[in-house]
Image 1 (cartoon, helix red, strand yellow):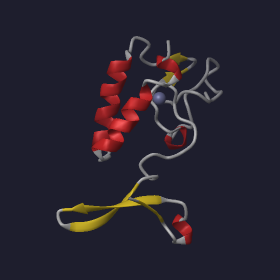
Image 2 (cartoon, helix red, strand yellow; image 1 turned 120 degrees about the vertical axis):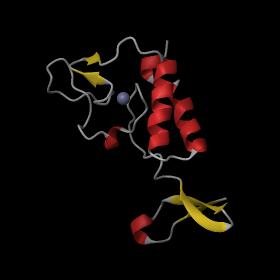
Image 3 (cartoon, helix red, strand yellow; image 1 turned 90 degrees about the vertical axis):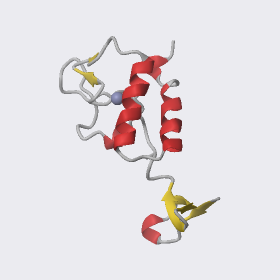
Length: 119
Ligand SMILES: [Zn+2]
């Protein structure tokens, strides 16, 4: 069951009510997966990239496709990386952020459809 928050500051944010150790809690659904463009290599939302995106060959222009973790000066930081290795890395990162497993799973599945891994 999903609900929409009525508080103006949080309007449009959706949450589920779940039972955790016998107590009801709200679990925010949107917070875990921000909208907007995602890095086409790792799937991280570009809006959460502190550097505002990877850099193109000139070292200044920001990439609109790839984040700063994946892409620098027009090339991938780890050109040999496979999609499976990316999934493993991302899983570890999301777990360390405390993201719930079902949300992690969803994020990992989405990696397969990113531009870098399409063939
Ligand atoms: Zn990335």
